[in-house]
Every structure is written in structure tokens, then in C-alpha cells.
Length: 84
Image (cartoon, rainbow, N blue to C red):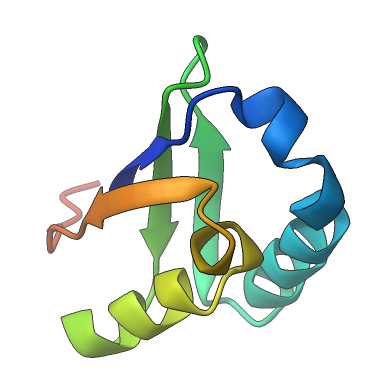
């Protein structure tokens, strides 16, 4: 998943940050989230979800507190084939 952050993300995310981090931790522990993080300039987010289909991945993105509260403003999901 590649997505974008809202303007002034560092300020706007504060009320939702702990819920977001708790969600990511639970997904990672369940094996559903391989990695996630912002670009250095905190304008984009990148994540690798481990799901059976795109619909499930979209559900995970859209259930995240950052999506639900407008911190992530858009996203694209691309299926990925791991070579190594």
C-alpha cells in the first residue's frame, strides 16, 4: 500500500496516534502486516499487508484510525510478487 498523509500530519495525528500504533502492533503480531512506515518527509506511507486478496487489504487500511480520521488521505494497493 502506498498512501498520502494530510497536511500538518505531525500535529493532526496526535489524538489518533496511540490507537493507530495499537492497531498496527496487533496486525503485525497476527502476521497480517509485514511492515509500515512514512517516507522521510512524512508525506507518504508505505505498508505491506499479507492478505488473500485486495478487498481484505482495503478493509485493513480503511479500518485504521489514520484512515478513519483523515490522517491518510488516499491510498493505492498493488499486488506484489516476492522474488526473494
